[in-house]
Image (cartoon, rainbow, N blue to C red):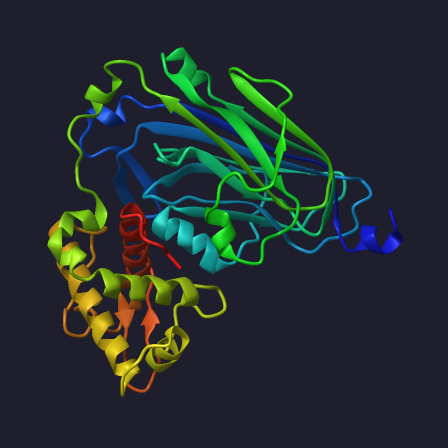
Length: 371
């Protein structure tokens, strides 16, 4: 190992990812689903699976890189929720990232400055993380790093003990290079197939001398007779409750999703400009920025109706459809979007983030591209 490489990379003895997934019957018999609380928000997740994830990194006594380590993190989609996160020390993640978990419950980041020879972990429960059609896990390995050993385990004992059968044997793929596009993250089975060290009911894969990359593990199960009946009729969730009102605004919602994807970042904090969005998307017309503004107004009106009908956390005043503000206009906490004169618009938190997450889940649920 060269001196430069050792000085500019995390030296890691082991990086471990442990996943345990089991079927959930209790939530299936409750039409509202399993209650989840994050911050002051309580919502219900209707799911047929519960997972427990634990991620552990053990630094070498020779590690000299002490820049903040951000690779104990997780982001879920498809309307799921992270519950009961536990970490091994003080979280140095910034207020924006920590606030996103409090606001949405969809992502968690554990950031810390590593000490040589020490071990750190993040563990949590995950609801609706591995529904039918989404039984796979995707992880980006730490970079820059020199990892002596990477371990991933997948425990499906809860399914096998409940009479489920495997329809797709768990497999792990390693892509040795970090992708340059997020489109890669939507693909499955890309990279080199890695044989497991053991299987049934706990599969284990061990990778030696890794310097980064992406790993995907995929599997599938079939329920035993009678299990599907427990689920009962499907209950509309999220924007599906708005039926034709949401379907009629599909393109406007796609626009709102793209705006939020680009501006809900720590450096931009939800700020965007209509003309800039129009240019980035190559929209035609004499005044495309004005067209974007009009489309955003339609989305605000949709969510105003949605939150009035289906609620949001207590003590939140109703929204004014025309302006997208609330009856407490001086307080951004109660707005979906701040559109004050002579200032660029801003997607506010937490309400604007809730609306963006609902939009993302609605589009993904309809199988639409999120690019």
